[in-house]
Image (tube, rainbow, N blue to C red; front, side):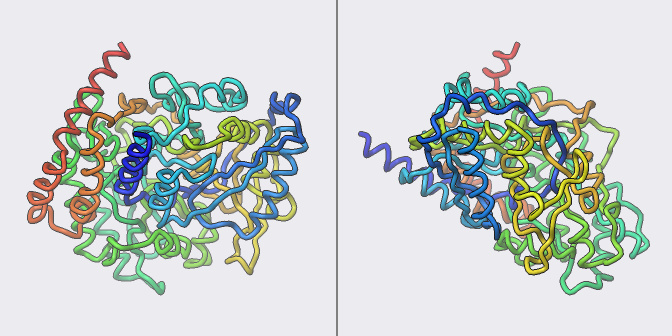
Length: 520
């Protein structure tokens, strides 16, 4: 029976590989925070009993990673935590497949990164791939609880038990806006667009007059999830807003109505917008096979005009325009007078796999990171004086290496395990408008009524796995605008129905109704 379950889990994990949202770490180095007391675990730990944990993350190993994490492990030892950490980096384009394989085969590791807008932690939970870390958080997580708001931490539970540590690194109400290059607007004598039609018109002009080596295509990989792609910028222009799309397949509005996302008029409108971009040459003709490294290279080169979501730096802008300043990236909201909605309680986090032999050590490490500003700075920014210098209480100046594309030789990831209480900004190259949108609370924002709802697809496990696979093949080309909705959607929907879409939607509606009743 045990062997059969392991085989089933391996199959489910292999089939559920998703087309991802792309690079998660789009933000510039972030804000601030005061030093906190040393971890309460330190005095109880026996320094001679060091547990080495493996922490699996997406991305490429920074040049000085080994040097920095030697210092991290030395400080962990000096603080008596009893933990040493080894990071294992998996390239972005192999992330889903490789991680799923590691989970299904029971490979030995202790911590891994989760992107809620790419593969929600409930997806891993359903497969039996997550450890319950409730006791560990209670015993070793004092600094986590201190620095992560309760309403965010509550979204990390299923059945009252913790299965992930959320990263409190971003204001989720930032969903729905996009970045635009003001220097490019001026260069082309254009006004800031206020509607999707104006955006397309301006982009056509920019494409025609572009002076760079490569066209400023929309920089993204292919997917069918608007929260992943940030095509949610369009939703503020619809009469039915506010609504969100949860778990890739489910439209949920603030009245509690749940519908199949791909069968809504809103999906059709999104697809029409993307089709216009594609047919007018604004998206890359190879969009369906674009690798994340290719997208990153374009964005890092400064050869872009509009960027869904937020990102960019002065260093990148000046590769195209040497006279660019940090004020040349602006934030645009369509219908800014409308409500600001948080679709998720948190965007990213870190979980312990069910196979881990050291869940307590994984939680101790995450808690230690938030025990002091020094700990956080070391993990995220490297060695002071070698990779960065401090600039006041909240600032950071990266030390750039001309042999590393003028980037620092080390940089962690605030999006993976950051916290706004400790994040630092580079005042010279980070983008002020992005910093405000991403890292400052929005007092007028509201949570989606589904923000903390966790779908458990156990009862429709086979169908859920099937529609994930089918949507990647049939729905993604339509949503990305490569195929005409009017010509391709009927056949694609028929395939989705045969894969079990109706059964999954019905189960989601049932569970959401029960969740709403429990909140009253």
